[in-house]
Amino acid sequence: MLLPYQRRPLHDLPDTPQAYDVVLADVAEQALARLTPEGSLEHPEAYLDIGDTSLGVTSLLALAWQRGRDPRLPDAVRRSLAFHLRARVYTEDNPGYPNLRVRDSGLPYARYVLEPGAHPIGDWPSTVWALLQAVDVLDLADGLLDDTRRAALTEVAHGYWRWLTEVTFFNPQEAGNQAIGCVVGGLMLARLLPPARGEAVRSRALALYTERIRAHRIRDRGALLPPEHGGAYDNNYGPISLSFLAQAHRVSGEPAFAEDGDTLARYIDARLPGGGYDTGGPRYSEQHSGFESVLGLRYFSGRIGSDLGRYRGDTRWGRHAVRPDGGLDGHFAWMLVWQIQDTSRWHRTPSAGPVRHQLRAGTVSVAFDGRMTPSLIEAAGTYYLPAAVDRRHGFGPVVDGFLLCRPMGEVRVRDAHAAPLTAKLVSKPVVGPDQVLRHVRSLYVTDGTSLWTVVAVERLAGDPCLLAGLPYAADDGDRVRRVARGELTSAGELRLRHPARTGVETFDARGELTQEQAAFALAAAPRGYGDPDEGWRHLVTSSAFEAGPAPGAPPDLHVFAVRYGPGGPFAPVFTAAEEGLTVRTEVFTAVLGHAAGDAHGVPTLSLHG
Image (tube, rainbow, N blue to C red; front, side, top):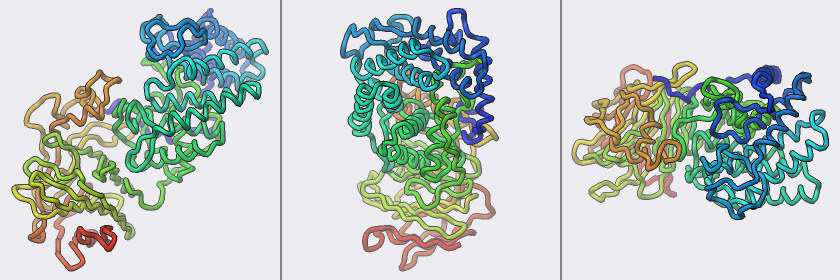
């Protein structure tokens, strides 16, 4: 089964001026065929996210005219703009809207659903989107709009800004992408207003970013990130926030947007494997954005010097928003406008140097969470998620159903490189049910094709094993598909266990449910409104590779050793020495220093090919 949203890497989409002209020509033909006598450019089946969409298509037509001077377009721009101003600008309060600070203000806003009171909660982001569409039309209006029409649209755009920042609470959905988008709208609007009014809007926009967004960032994996629907990062909306930060920096030149964008970009780079698949977020788990992410990923890929374009987007939205029938939708049109206007190019090679929360070389990647437990492993084209056992999730030693991966102290990391090998040693203090403190030392070594993992821990009672991951997905050309197996070899006994019973709290890799569907089934609220990350944490058990202890370990240690990916016989040799534990495999020799580390407590690691 193919995953619905995980499609091609976004840097595969041609982004030359000629390619964009083809996109705009297609937009123009669809729009001219759709334009109603009233001037609407909305998709006939649109119901949600509708208040800004006709104006969005208008902005694309204006850009197409500026680039190609198609004589059919000026009339379509004027008629569709007149439609928006006449039929899609609302000044009476929407019944039931809960976030007003001022009632009966008379200021304009855009509706998420046109019917009064039908779904008013979405009016705030719809008005942000309408503001962005409006300022794009104004920016592209030369030769298309007379002074009267320009003045009318400018007044509406300013009214949108005031409604967003004065009449309602700011960012009522706690969605970083929406909030930064509002700031971008203010910065772009400020350039179109008389100096005094423009400076007031610009100052307010920068203050909102500093006081209401930047001051409330959430830390994850060592990075401060704009909060998204109550969490630190969402793999659908996070790259959209990155695009907004790129546009904010392009428009204003303010260093804060570049600095925060660099931080978010490096975070995405660390959590994203080489194959571009990602999972996790408080709004969606696997639903990826498409063209909305291109601007930010492309802009910041050059700034941080890494290939962010490997991010797998939903390429059904590869150029612009579409409806289920594939037809053009104006939602997010401003992002296509900015993407076409931006002249930055993709950086297509990985970043150099070690990164704390990632190990990556060739076709192998390990992304680590804030506790330095793998959140995703990619090897031999297969993606492994953290497995679940008795409600505990992760990769690590298991004894009597208890997973030893939650740290009870500082987690130490040491990186090493010996061409063609790259390695990371993670030393983590843990406490098990017996209340005994142990040190779990996990070594990850890759040659760019296979991944070796060696885990050493003070000797455990009972019958321990290593929880080595849930095989979940694999690359299948232009798509990602579900899998239930992986290419894994263990020095000890290896078994692929599946849940013995069925139910919402179990996840069997052989089933048809995706991770996102299973996560929403466990979430406290319906799909799209619940927190799938929180839901997934309620998972009791999952399919999992379990590796038994490797033979020949020193008597005071349990050592587990597995190899992800291709290779021949796997029979590592372990030797206890004064300097630590020596591990010899068919490819490398590594010495893991003692758990106490060096004079500063930092673990020591030597690596030889």
